[in-house]
Every structure is written in C-alpha cells, then in structure tokens.
Length: 169
Length: 101
View 1 (spheres, rainbow over the protein chains, first blue to last red):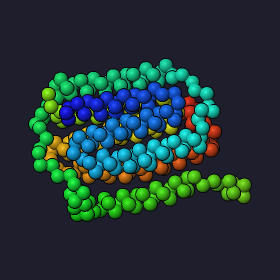
View 2 (view 1 turned 90 degrees about the vertical axis):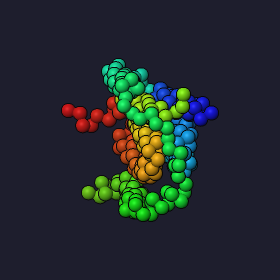
View 3 (view 1 turned 90 degrees about the horizontal axis):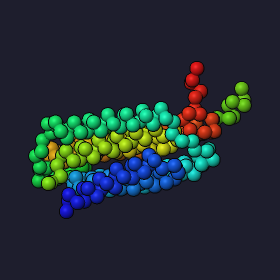
View 4 (view 1 turned 45 degrees about the vertical axis):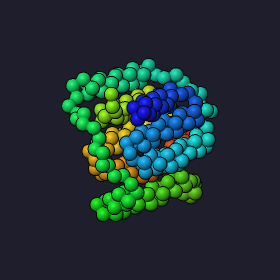
C-alpha cells in the first residue's frame, strides 16, 4: 500500500514538474506547480513528517503559488508574444539533464547507499519539533524571525516607486 | 520490493533535474522562478528522507527552516521581478540585456 502511494505521489510530483517546464501559459504553469507541490507533501507524509507535509501545503500551496498567481495577473506576460525555445538553450538543457540522469543511473548501479529499512521508533510529533526548536535550534529560530522582518522591509522598499526623487533632482 | 532510502533520493534527483532543465530552457522569468522553487523542494525531499532513515529529527528541522527561508525568498524575488517589469517593461530574459557589451 505504501509502495503504491509512493509511486503515485512520485508520478504526480515529477509529471506536474514536467508540465511546469513545458507549459506555454504562465497561469497553467503556476497551477501545475501547485499540484506538483501537493505530490511533495504526500511524499513527506510517507516519510512520517506530517507537520512538514501540512506546512508545505500551507506555505507553498497557500502562500507561494497564490503570490505567483497575483504577480502573473499583475504583469500579464501574455501581452508579450511567446517565442519558441532557442536551439542552443534547448541543447544545453538537454545535455545538463542528461548528465544529471547519468548521475542518477550511476547511483542506482554502483551506489553504496545503505538499504537498511527505516527505524521504527521515529518520533516526529509537534512536541518533538517544539523541543528541538526551543533548545538546540533556538538561535536559528531567532535568526529566521529576523530574516522574515528583513524580507518584509525589503519587499516594501523594492515595490515603492522612486519617481519623486528622480524628478526632484 | 519495499521503498527504501534509494527511491526517495532518486525521486529527489529527478525532480531537481526537471527543475534544472526548466531553468536552462525557459525564457519567462516567472517560470524560471517556479523551476527554482522545484529545485529547492527537491533538496528538501532528500533532507527529509535522510532524517527519516537515520531516525533523527534534525533533518526535518532543517526542512522547516528551508520552508521559512523559501517563503521570504519568494516574496523578495517576486518584488524584484515586479520592479524589473516596471523599469524595462518585459519579463523575458533575452530582452533583459542591459549588461551586454
């Protein structure tokens, strides 16, 4: 059952990731990204990280994809005529993806990764996360909080119009 | 055949390869950014899998931090794209050639 679910979510993830890459329409690409991220959330649920699975849906599907859709609506890139892919970039992309694929094949064929099954006693409840975050990782939590503040200020500064200054000089 | 660490790592690498291909091939800055997000998520799958198969929670806490940083990063990146569009009137990368020559 878990095997079937893994292959289902893996197919969902990779299939819709390919759809993001090959979709001409930006809005459709954003919605395919959403479905791909839901697949990733399923993978995290299979890894017994239920909190991360829920957070992935909340943060990525709820905030990031919605932000992407807003920006697409704001910029309206459909107004720019879509040109086909450049041959040189297509060739470079295909070669790069082929190299990565070769790496994966090499990992499968000659990899030294352990095939041991996952440990049974894996505690990943809210309590365990809280204990980790407020003892071992207290400083990173503070830093990340400050980072969020900096990002918020940065976004405000970036989206502000500076025309008054330019006209004044 | 049971699902082990290998399968998760292969899935992570595949997703990373797809995102990488998209970054190289696409010309729309917004879609390039979406492909960057795919690559970021692919790396978190590897972290989560290592954490689960080692039986320790630290990898999952790292994924937690990566999610937070990714949210901040998306907000700033999209603001930069909007500023770029205001300044240059396009989001196609081949038209953003101000630094050429």
